[in-house]
Amino acid sequence: MQMLKRLAGALPLVLAGAAMAAGPGGYPSKPVTVVVPFAPGGGSDNIARYIVSRLADRTKASFIIDNKPGAGTNIGNEYVGRAAPDGHTLLFGQVTLAINPFVYKTLRYNVQKDFVPVAHIADSPTVLIVTQSLPVKSAKEFVAYAKSHPETINYGSGGKGTSVHLAGELFGATTGTKMVHVPYRGSALAMTDLIGGQVQSMFDTAPSALQHVKGGKVRALAVTGSKRIAELPDTPTFAEAGISGFDAPAWYGLLAPAGTPAPIVQFLNAEIEQILKEPATRQRLTQLGADPVGGSPDEFGKFIRAESDRWSGVVRAANVTPE
Image (cartoon, rainbow, N blue to C red; front, top):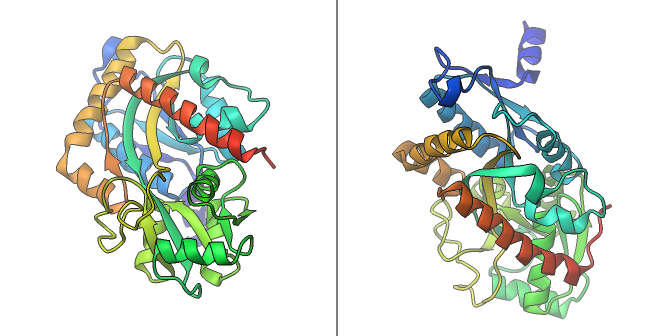
């Protein structure tokens, strides 16, 4: 019985309705695979699974979550970029789409040419968290401590070139602090060492950090964005904490291979728009530390291009290269 349970847990998540949906041209005509370029159980994966489950419920179609982690999301991104443009393979993309083209010298996909934006699903702030043993209680105290101990404060991340690594680089440039970056092969490993005190700080996305902050394993000092996180009402924004000009949000959205028929893109966008308006969806995203966004495919495309322009400057200033 235990072996059967383990085998079942290793299978992709299949979310099925009672019958196929009545989308454009009979779409979908087979199960739809949504690729998440991260391992199961993380912040991105949790958001993706909720949204995909609602798509399955609404469309009465079968959806499969396929986790393809690795290479800074490039494995999953490339897989979808090379997939058939028929709407049956989709990417649950996030901020690395705006970062990786400037970090990796050679990519086997082109963000602007190989994908068509479908829907901007959610944004989430980045949280500055520290080990409980670090003698600081606020973001300003953290900056003062880092300035009085230059290049002795370290911060962990899920690897060079990740959004949370670049958040640390941007924070250093904004505040004039010099910290030491410690890259790990995945943010979960970085979090483990932060909790254990092997690293002192970390810039993490809210969906990933919340459970550890609320569990008292790490201390949150400040969050990016213009408002506090509902799940961390006592943690100020960086602006409230007296640190202006620093913002490094994460974002999540659905993309399809370039050439996917416009009616399919519009169908999926319309369904997600309705899902994001549901009170249960808004509640669930809030619990995960994210805010629903929505909007048209064109608006999402413009957003990705603007993010690419922003992060390209951060990458160049930090002279970031992949491991």
